Amino acid sequence: MRTKETWFTVLMEGLAKFPPRPTGAGEMFQLFRDGEPRTRASLVAETGQSRSTVAARIDALCGIGLLVPAGEASSTGGRPPSTFAFDPSARIVLGVDLGATHARIAVTDLAGTPLTVLDEPLAISDGPDHVLGWVADTAHKLVAQAGRDVTELAGIGIGLPGPVDHTTGRPVNPPIMPGWDGTDVPAVLHARLGAPVLVDNDVNVMSLGEHATVCPEVDDLLFVKVATGIGAGVIMDGHLRRGAQGAAGDLGHVTVPGAEDIPCRCGNTGCLEAVAGGLAIAQKLRDGGATIAAAPDIVDLVRSGDVAAGQAVRQAGRDIGTVLAASVSLLNPARIVVGGILAGAGEHLMAGIREIVYQRSLPLATQHLRIVPSGAGSQAGVIGAATLVTEQYLAPPTVDALVSSQEDS
Ligand SMILES: [Zn+2]
Picture 1: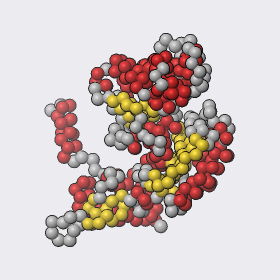
Picture 2: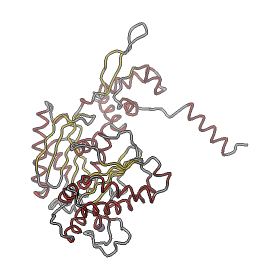
Picture 3: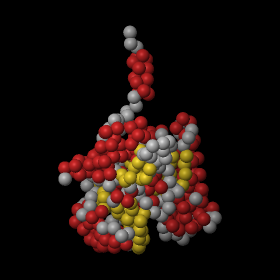
Picture 4: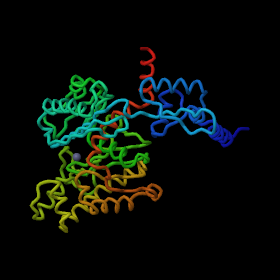
């Protein structure tokens, strides 16, 4: 008689003996994304496919430019075998990071390495015509500076400082972007640059940038932005998770216990953002007699050693920690990264968050959990925006489609 245990044992032994193998050219290409060159023989061993299949797939991947010959491997005798490697310079990508008052644009290669970068003050409130016109003009200029042509663009990734419907690329009621609601950002830029355009909100783009530049080996990560607003990007199994409507990670409007009488700009009361966001902390400090206007002033005050400001930020950290503790129980991330302008207030914010998350989560979920400030530099936004494109462009279905269209032509 086969018990559950015996069929399970058989299954596990079978999987150990015959692990799932990459099948098509697109799947095989994923092996090369670690940057290591490989020989045909090593791919036969790695994929379990026949030598002729491997040779055909290498030819196909070389045909679309994603693989290039990378010299010869050392040999134990006879003719040394040829090696092949991913060529990130095959195409270029445009990464665009638009903030409330600044814009940064980079031309990168397919590995997300910036080739040229430009950083300029630009008000998002100037509206889509002006801002997207500037993006297109600047893109043409930067691509030429990099010695490339816009026809080589694999795609354009853009992060916007407001809610975006990622499937259409249109902003949805963005509070600090007058005139942008419903703008067809992909259509406007595609008309000027002729490449696919992917749009997402700034928090998701920052999460991708942090993941790509600081901790690509961490598969399960929450990136929390603490600024005027509070939001999070959710990376699970190595991929950004947006949820059914793209609203995953919107922590700012989760209710904080004990704050039911505090109104929030969303129309509800007791939201995390209304209690622990930059505006809320600034108001609290003004009520205590401090003369500050916005989030950067809070950071300055904390850094100058102001006790009340330090305490206010620490309490904000505890409130954020309360909401994050629930997220830790739900998602079991390996790392929580804290970014946004208030992360610049240093240990006070981190200490408040850590205090509550470690206290309120079960030991199994926090055993290896690290809660750290963002380590990505100022280019994380543009690299994250470029990653929006490369995640799609280098994925197996796209690579297979490129191979098919090459074979048909
Ligand atoms: Zn709210």
